[in-house]
Length: 182
Image 1 (cartoon, rainbow, N blue to C red):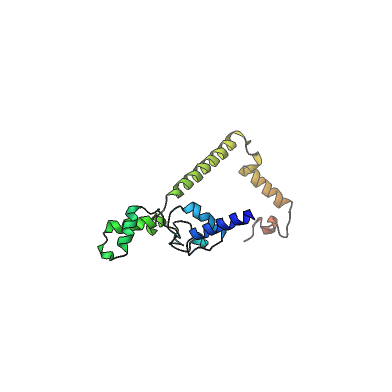
Image 2 (image 1 turned 135 degrees about the vertical axis):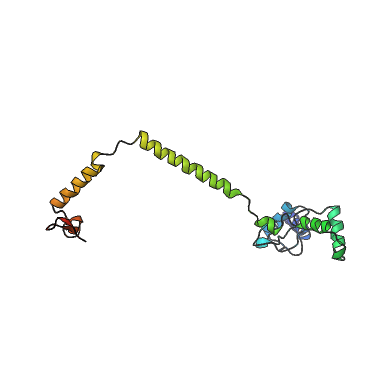
């Protein structure tokens, strides 16, 4: 009985802390309160969670980027009035309080591809050096049958023995004229 009272008291306290846009009683809503601190929840969020992420495909995160300070609260109060009275610096400060990066900054390349290309080229160079050193120090010399004289002699032997005359190499040899067929 005491556990039920404590459990219901904790649930009531958590439900009172949840914003109106979050789903009351969901596990995600309860656990995100600890992670976001005092930051304001301003929307539904990516997959319905109150999290912050700079994403091009989801440009409006559910949570503001920074926790509110006295300066930001004063700017938000001034924001409720005429926007023409806000300076460019104040507008930028309001934007940076809600977002970490602009869309252009999110889309800008990080240069990480250079690191990956460099590593790939290092491994390629190492593989080439291993292949060269293996050819120099590990593998034996090619057999004498690989030189052009022996290859011509082997071809002449295949022709003389008429090996595979129907579909093979000797089917393209004209035995009467002693030359290759066209």
